[in-house]
Length: 301
Ligand code: GDP
Image (cartoon, rainbow, N blue to C red; front, side, top):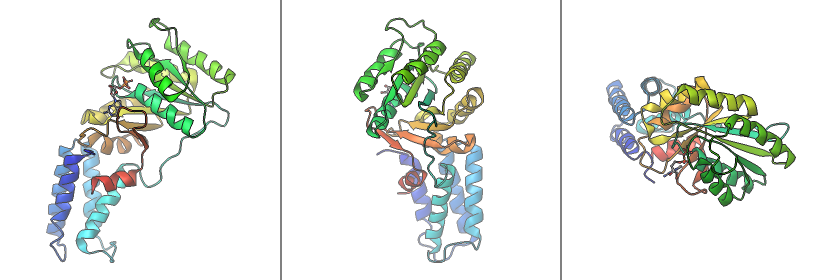
């Protein structure tokens, strides 16, 4: 997998240069930290995240609080690994916050093309595999075809899709979302996944609509879906959605593509919300629970 190709190569190289050294001098550590800093910046990781990262690595590498069982180079690799895990969200993966009274409502927000509709199908299929009974809701009435596309992924996942009649793209998404809650209860679906409209860029109408849908369905989870190729825009976009709608977790999509890594490495730390899942392809099975520690070791190997 091409995941983080260049960043990964650069970090491995920077750390590899230490291997020849028996004992690390502060100058060795500084040199390595500089290379790490450059590699992260070139991978479009947000500047505050980079600064924080390298400060931690440097402090820890120069402190006495190191694992004596490892040689100096291995110690730095270990520290970089730990710090990657930390900025990706820490060692504990967060579980989905299921509602005490079903249905559990999960709302998807994000820019157009981020992969929300595809993700709705992936989540639905994943929940079916865990013996849940999900329903999908087409509250994206903006984009021509969004409803049809959701129906297609719903069919593939074998779950029903609640939507206005096809072709009737001028409906009110807030009303559709509200109505879907009643249907879900009637039909005893224990999970409802609400797909919402995105725009090409962040705009006020989009935020207001998403906030209105959120108020109407009172979701247990709001997942901010973000294309991992988006690079430096990741942080601004994430902040706009965090301030405008609020979300409880992020989902990274298109991690199968040759992404530079910036979004993945910036979003959790700058919003304080965990990355819950990763989407790694166009097929419904191309989907993983996100584990910061596994992601860190993929980057460093
Ligand atoms: P939405 O506008 O947010 O609903 O985005 P879509 O679900 O329509 O996805 C936009 C495009 O990205 C589609 O062509 C999807 O097939 C594609 N896509 C979605 N997720 C992934 C992924 O994880 N990897 C790849 N390679 N393509 C994806």
